[in-house]
Length: 154
Image (cartoon, rainbow, N blue to C red; front, side):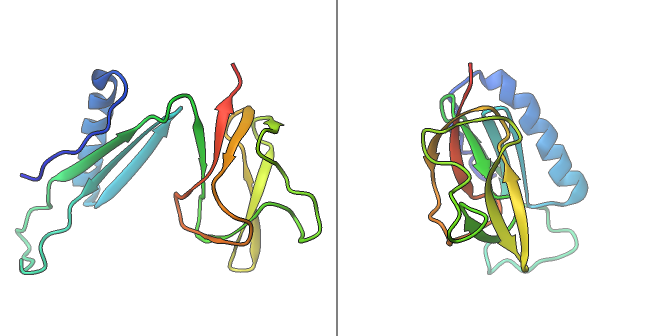
């Protein structure tokens, strides 16, 4: 059985039920990874890859999952919903949608991700203050990559 890694900074009983449900989803759908965000808590259950020397068979069981739980203080992370190129403004000469320190509303556009020649507007999940912009303008981003840290309004 593979070890379970946990980075927990809050009530473990709150997470236990969610981890069990994600584990069932992994088994039922034969997935290798699942991730859920609830507020500022993110839980990812991921199966460890089998060693390359192990020959796969139809009766080979899926490896045990690794559980990673993160809760970065009171910050909310805006993540890339797709692979593409990150842009802070609608055009090279336009003002950026947001700057660090700006107060934003829920649903406000914070950036654009270009994917397959389509410009996708990314909106803030919560109202608050932009604490940190984590990606440089014009850089490639991966699915799930953190783009912004937002300090939610109280």
